[in-house]
Length: 332
Image (tube, rainbow, N blue to C red; front, side):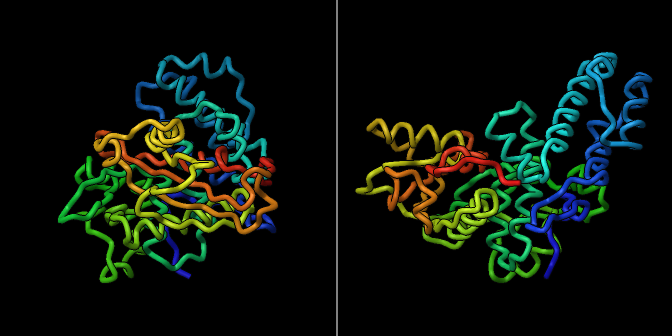
C-alpha cells in the first residue's frame, strides 16, 4: 500500500486491536514543535521553561498559574489551548474517542486543532484507499477550498495553497516535505502522482454535478460515518433536491445548514443562494436498527455549500451530531 498525508503525523501514533489510534509522546511532541509554540528569542523565561519541560514529558501536569505567568498574551492563549487539547487527548483511550467527545460537547478549541484531528483520523479511516479521487475529496474535510467555475466546471483548489501562491506549509516544511508546485486539476492522467504529492495540496478537484469528484466525496462520507459511528451507510450524490420529502437533513458546513433550515421552513431559495450549493447527497442506512424509529427506512439529505466569497469550509463533525441514530456513545 502507498503512504500518503505524512504531514498529519499518523506514523507517530499507535493503533489498538480495533484499528483506532492511540496518542503517543512522539505525537504530542510534534504539536510542541509547531511554530506557534516555539518561544521567540524575546520570550520570557516561564514560557521557555514550560516548553522545555513538556518536550521532556508531554504529559506533565500544567497548572493554570504556570500559563498565567507567561508574559505575552498571545503566548498565554496558545499554551492554554494546547494544554486543553493535550488533556482532552489524555482523557480518552483513542484519538477517535477524543474527537467524538470534543465535537459533541463543543469544547472550545481553535478550528486548526479540530482540522488536524480530522486529518489524522481520516488518514486512519482511509488507510487502504487506492482511489486518488477519494483521497483528494477527503481533503475537503480538513482544508478550506476556494471554488471557481472554469470552462463550465466547478473546481475546488486548496485555499492555503492558492492564497500563498505556493510554498510548503509550516508543518510540511518541518517534516522536510517537498516544495509545492502549481495547481493542476486531478484527472486520470495525473491520478497516479497523488501519493507522492499528497502533502503539497496542489491538485484541484472537479466538483461539477454528475462527475467523479462528488461521488468520491460521498464515498469518503460513508467511510467517516463507519469509522466513527460504526454504522454502514450509502451516500449518493444528487443533481438537485426535486420532489423529495425533507424528513431529515444535515448541513455539511454552516452555509449548507442555513440552506437546509430554509428548505425545512418552506422558505423560497433565491438564485444566488442556489448557486452556492456545491453538493447534494442522499444518505441511506444499511442497518435500519441504528436509526431512530421515525426515520427507519427514510433517507437523510446532506447539503454542502460555499460561502458568498466562494470559500468552502466543510464541518464533518456535523455528521456525528446531526444524523438520526439511536445511540450517540463515543467510539473507544
